[in-house]
Length: 366
Image 1 (cartoon, rainbow, N blue to C red):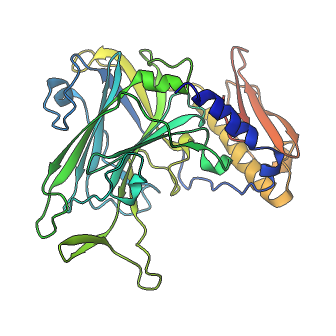
Image 2: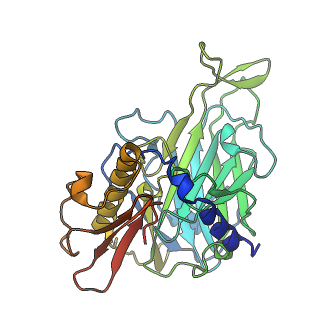
């Protein structure tokens, strides 16, 4: 699969100036930027990937907070509980998700089907925190997987998803606490256990083999849940009486997005990889000193996209955008802005001159 990096380059090249004329405003998340965080400890022994979570390491690993609605606390608490836990070693990232579910059903059994048409659990990983070149994995109650790479979020280009990519060496285990596709009884739920080999990430990230102790990656989980009824021994999605289409699915996530869209990687949670074994010495959370500066540049991006929609060009200054941002003390303020009609960049330099952060017209933060 060595073709992946050239494919990324080709996809970027295809998004030329003509594509920018079609750029739409980007919805601003309706919640404050407060990503949830989790410390993933090292496993002492590779777990058996069977969905049972019986190993001592899994028993010692902590659960995340219960999942919430994708839009945040303004929406109702999910009907069914969902929570996750994570481990890692030199070869794999391990995660497990436990889900309450009174009606177990699944229809899709072919790899790389559009799995969210069933109830599913999804994982999103952005190793660099750039919001570009990230991975998505979806799994239904059959244990069927859809794995794909995205060059960038859909909001930033027409051709972004590489669906022919597979996570080579991916291991999936699932356990059903009930009966699958058998209406008439009440099920309890299902559990998914997954091992993702670090080597699978090398095809899109040259420098990524595995995280280092203390390193932080952006990551989120999402659960898709459809409302159903049963008739003639089958489950069916509830439909809107006026349109005949299925009612909108529920989206329950670990770290709320503030918008009904998982492809806002900037809103995902943060996972810190500990060098200690699970159940042993505990790490403290290491706050990212650049987080406020990163978010300030993201605010510039949102404002620029809105400005472009109104004026068909990008602004050349914060004043032109009408954007008022609180200065970030550790960085030279205000951000330096460069713009042409169809491109822009905004940069913040650290006062100690050891680093520079930059965001571009296509949302790349680096």
